[in-house]
Image (cartoon, rainbow, N blue to C red; front, side):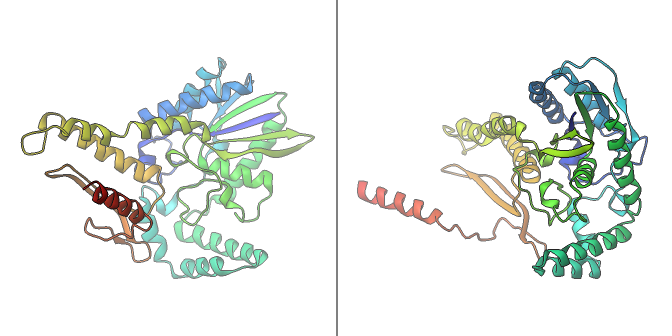
Length: 351
């Protein structure tokens, strides 16, 4: 039996990089317009695997909405089965916090900071597992996420439940924490020691072995259940969204900014089109900085022959001190200097 897990598509909370708790039954976090496109693309991608016999979903709205869009692509017409066993763990004290607020909150715990430094410098993998265990337990207590063990047992119950089904292919729409938990169970991974195989944007110390798009939304993981055993076949990734992501990058509004403004003869600003395009560009920069580029800081300027049209500084100049980046901060341009020198020499030769 083939078992496919899909994380829900993008919500506004994902765009804002905020944690939110799954235990608020009346919560309403619908997926964004971009999330709708992701879901449709995911359905198209999953169609190549063949007919799905049954579809499960977490009862949360964002998961059901994602599942409803995906099943159109895979031509599934039966009912989506909701299961609370698919809910991920509580956010606890981190509920509704942004990533910056989470970082600040975690850094206030001296024990967590100490354990993190010990884990990063430890070279013995067996000792490192023990440090991760201690760090995880301290993290749960500090953030009031003590229900994690119950959630873990729910995942085991769900895997045991679907193992009894006589199906060839199953689709499950759920949460990032759910997929991570399932992968840990079937891989018998000790205390997140192999956490780098899963893209969890809230774990700032995790490493990604797969390139992720849109903050890991619509991630797919697949398992094979055979001979009373689950095996991971497809590690969590959303590479099926690469074309969608590349098309968005290709439509970079900066090209239109230059095109609309290049022939301006007034004060260097084509007011009718330029301001609109700059607002689009501002949204483009902020969205991709949060969700796609995985960089600590960014400073950008757009200008023509006469004026500076746009300036923006995002992120940090120093990750350790959390000093915010300023537009006046200097960057090391490294080998970019070679291109500039070549251009300067070429201009000098022509003159």
